[in-house]
Amino acid sequence: MPLVLHIRDAYEEAVHLLKEYFKPPIPAVSHCFSSNREVMEELLDLGLFISFAGPVTYKKNDALREAAKNCPLERIVVETDAPFLAPQSKRGKRNEPAFLMETAQRIADLKGISLEELGKASSRNCEVLFRRDFK
Image 1 (cartoon, rainbow, N blue to C red):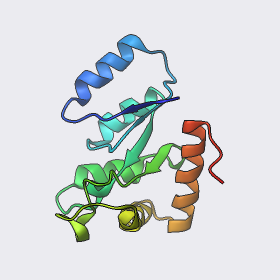
Image 2: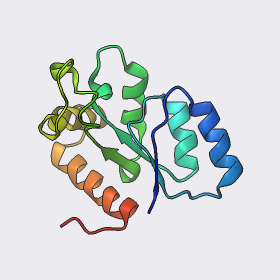
Image 3: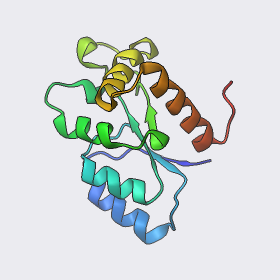
Image 4: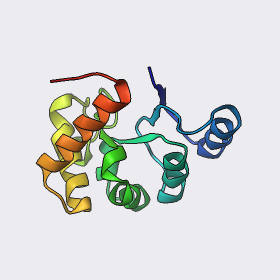
């Protein structure tokens, strides 16, 4: 199974440890990614998938939106992080899977692709990452 890394306010340290203890490509995902494009690119270079959640929709999160816009489609995953981090229109509420569409639509818009294309890519990436067929 891949590593699921929930990094919060420690990206520099996490990248350092990944480089020290693992040889790329590292079978891992940066769960609920919350940093910027530069950090994302370092993680991509190590072989990680990048997972985006509700914060990509927050008004003052331009750096995260820039990362989502530039994340290669073949390495992107979309998630809820339920019950936390609901998208902008539901902030302050308990997050749930039904709210995923707002997050996904925002990412699709940033990338200039359809919601369907993003959904297919994210699903395919989860199958690759977790070595499972979810169909």
